[in-house]
Length: 168
Image (cartoon, rainbow, N blue to C red; front, side):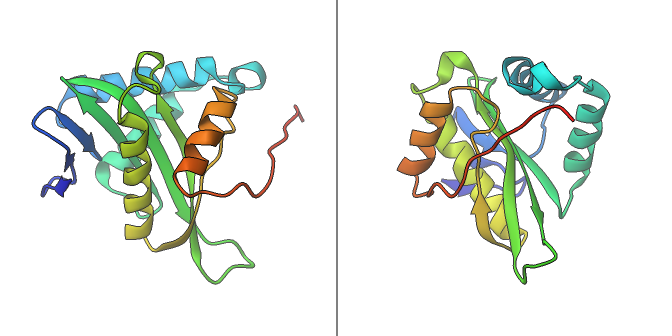
């Protein structure tokens, strides 16, 4: 895996992880996949989708942010998976930590390709580049929770708690 000056991680001639958009097509594919993630997730049951906030987030990441980042896996010009994360300090912590906002692979590519693994590597790279000392990931979208848990455990993450939610 090599990193180009554009922040893309080239896996082969046609496969790569990207951390910024080369084209409006990639931007649109990321946007569409993020909206599908929302529709497929438990969030859709409790929260209202806000596509304008998604665009704001994507624009912040596109300009470059010390706090937020995104990545996406592309094969044959098709975005197969997307990732977003953030780094932050809590009042009771000395260190900067990272949390994924989501790591999502499209249905057709789950368990078949390297998209999830490469997105996780991208998350780890972008988080540590921003100073994170501890990386948190979660299976809190309600999408393929068991498979996601197994995936994280295979990649050396340990379970530390459980998420619960209800409407306020």
